[in-house]
Amino acid sequence: MRCPFCANDASQVKDSRPTEDNTAIRRRRQCEGCGARFTTFERVQLRDVTVVKSDGKRESFNRPKIEQSVSLACRKRGIDQERIDQLVSGIQRQVETAGESEVSSSLIGEMVMDGLKQIDSVAYIRFASVYRDFGEAKDFAEFASQVRDAGGE
Image (tube, rainbow, N blue to C red; front, side):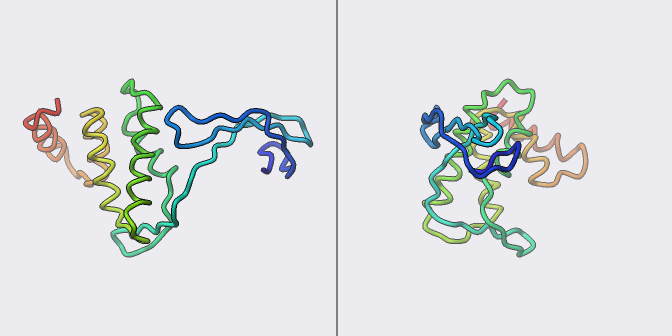
């Protein structure tokens, strides 16, 4: 593992343990060159999945991209990082076990929205505003009233 501080290729694992949701291994490492300590995470990847965007472009499935989007939607909402990690891990598991080598970005977006709907209505509306490309304040109001009417308040 390359050291993020000095780029030395040699490091020693000082401690390994599973993450709280048991979807990854957390490893504490020490660089043999500069002595700096850093943490890495090891996750199981069942298969390579390609995401097909709405414009037809294709890119590899990117877990950190989903984590960033969900974290941004949940920002300042008091939602535990563990809960966000569980949501993202669940989406990744669904995508990888679906048996398809390609998945549409709209399907992933709907999975994220379904998950956020269960966690927090404000985070759900925040994500939806970007995902569904709200253009005006009335779009927010209409969507928020739909969420309220559905009991997601």
